[in-house]
Image (tube, rainbow, N blue to C red):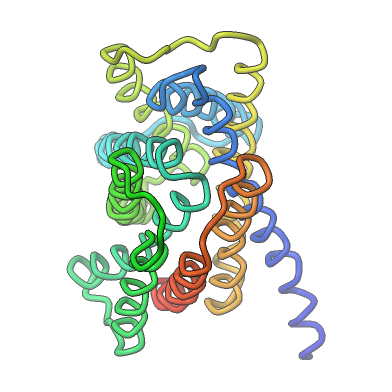
Amino acid sequence: MNSLRLNSGIAPLLTLSAGAVCISFAGVFVKLLGMEKMGPTAIAFWRMLFGAAILFTWSALRNDRLSLTASVLRWSVLAGFIFFLDLFFWHRSILYSGVGMATILANTQVFGTAILGFLIFKEKLSFKFFTAAVCAVAGLALLIGLGSKIEFSVRYLEGVTFGLLTGLVYANYIIVVKIAGHSESNPGFITLVAWISLFSALFLGVTGLCEKDPFMPPDLISVIILFALALIAQALGWWAISSSLPKIDASRSGLALLLQPVLATFWGVIFFSEYLTLIQIAGAIVTLVAIYVGSVKVR
């Protein structure tokens, strides 16, 4: 019986891990495009537009219902606006502070999600959660560079601030999607995220056109990278995670999801030479452990 249960949990765990790996490349794609090619808001716009097209096509091939009720539509517009803010902050954090740093900072959303869950859904917070939150604050202080000899430039500090804002905003996004997804008239996850992606693209498009950064992809390579970002991180990554999470216990799923920030940090070193000091590495480890404990509580 235990062997059967173990085998039945392997496939969802592998799917979840694959989703975390897919999403770990998001920062790499963003930084490749942001190196004097396109503005961070424009990158987010094309990512969401291509992502919406992929998800709508996917949903149609599954014969899912594509329309939304008025109630779900309102929540989807709100979720689209919140995700617009999330990408607005996160893409800047990637370009200003680095792929690994931005991804770890964004994953602090687990603490904001737990607090919002307590305030809105009356979900209990344990002593273990508060301990993890305190450890996360200490780890973040080391990760940012307090006590090390790194240069705290204005651009770097802006990147750190944008990363922390990403975590805060994304926590709100998760709560809104949770409310929309629990509606009896919910058309299905793929369709729901397709509409959210489209609404987010509209907000990003209006904002991007008002900025001075390059908005249109400058060449075919940029278009290919944008499509890869939409397909791998936006569509495949989130589908893999959302479809497998309900089938896995919290401890294993929380551990598997840590692949995203760990691999993102590794990609930053490999592709962009984003090295951390020993103090920052210690801070990253403390923060990731705290995120893991917090994610188990949230899940």
